Image (cartoon, rainbow, N blue to C red):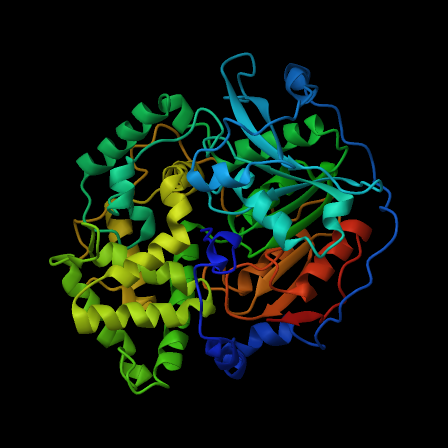
Length: 546
C-alpha cells in the first residue's frame, strides 16, 4: 500500500524526528539475508551522474488500436484550470498554476466500447525546457492512490533534476479513484474517521460473517454507481486506460514511473503493450509470481522484521516502553494492544483507539524508519497514561489523505477485481499464518468461523491472474528499484520482477518503502534521470545507500 512518508511536503513542517534511527540502521543493514545480497549487492555505491544530451531515439511504432477503440485513442486532451478536480483539502491547496488538468474518456467495459464511459482525471506539469522528450506518466501506488495528488509532490522531489525540464509530469487518478468518475464509494467519512473502514484484506481485521461481506459489496455498489462499476476497476482495465492516455498525450511510446502498486500496473502494461513502452522505472516491486496469500505472508514477515528492528532501537534507552530486552518486545506489545479489542482508550476530540486502529497506526509508521521515535512515544503514552492520542496522530499524519479521499474504498474494489478468492476455511488458515510470521499483530483470539474473504460476493471474477507478466517479449530494458529493508514490498520481489521483465535492479540500502523521486536520495534520482533521459541503465552491482 501507498503511504504518505514523513518526507512528503505536507508533513515536513509538522514532523520532527530524532536522527538516531538512520545511524542505527546502518549498523544493522547486514541483517538482510546474505543470499539476496550476493545476488544484487556487489560493487560500490553509485556516484552522482552527469546528466546531459538529447533524447534517445524511439524504437518501432506502436500498432494502431482496434477500430472500435479508435475514438478513444484519437481524442485530444484540453488542459486548463484544475478548478473542480480537488476532492480533499490538500488537493485544493496544490492544484494551482502551473499545474493543468483535463479529463480522459475511456470505456467502462472494453468489451463493449460503445456502451457507458468513465472519465479519468489527469494532471500535468508541462516541461520547463525546449528539449522536451515527452510525458512521464506517474502512479504513486495503492491500489487506490491518487496520481493527480502525488504529481505536485513528485515535482518537488524532482526540482534538482533535469526531468522537470525534459518531461511533462503527468499524474492520473485510475478509474474509480479520486477525481475520476464514477468513483468508488463504500465508506462514510465517519466510518473512515472512526476506523470502521477495515476489510479482511488487512488480514487482522476483526470478525466477519457472510452477511457482513454481502452488505459490504451492496454498500459499495450503491455508493459507486452500480455493480457494473465495481466490476470495471481492475488493474488490467487501468493498463488499457493508460495506453489510451499515452496516445491522447501524443506520445508514441510510454515513459512510466510506478511506485509500490504502480509496479504491478507497470508490469501488467508491459505484458499487454510491450511494443508501446519507451522506458519504465518500477520502485518497490510487487512480485508478479506471488498470489495474494503468499504475498501477504511475505509482507507481514517483513513488517515483523521492521518491528523487531524498531524494538532493538528502542531498547537502547532505559525507558523504552517495550523494555530493554528486544526478545520480549513482541510479548510486551501484545500485552499492551490486545486489551484494546474489548476496551478502546481515549484518543482526544471524542475519538478512541482500538486494536485495529492502534496496530494500523504502528504499521503505517513502520514504512519509514525515521518515524520510529514517534511509534515509541505513542506506545509509551498508551502504557503510561492509558491514552492513544499520539498513536492516532500517527495514523492521521501518515494515511490521512487516504481517509479524506476514497483510497480505502478504491483499494478494496481494485483488489477484489485482481486477487484470488478464498473460502472461510482458507481465510482462517491465512490469518493463522499471518500471526505466525507477524506475531506482534496477533489478536490472541480464535480465527475459526470469524473471518471471510471481503470479496466473496463481488459481482465479478478476478481478472489479473497469477503469475502474470512472465517472459515478456519485445519490452525495452526496465529499471527496478528495490530497498533492502522495505517492509511493504520486500527486497526479494525486485529480483523476481526483474527476471520476469528482463529488467535491471538498482539496490538501495535502507529502511523505508519506495524512494524514487521523493527528494531523499540524490543517488537514486540521478540514476533514474539518466535512465529516463538517455535510456542508460546502472552497471551491475551499482547501489545507493540511504
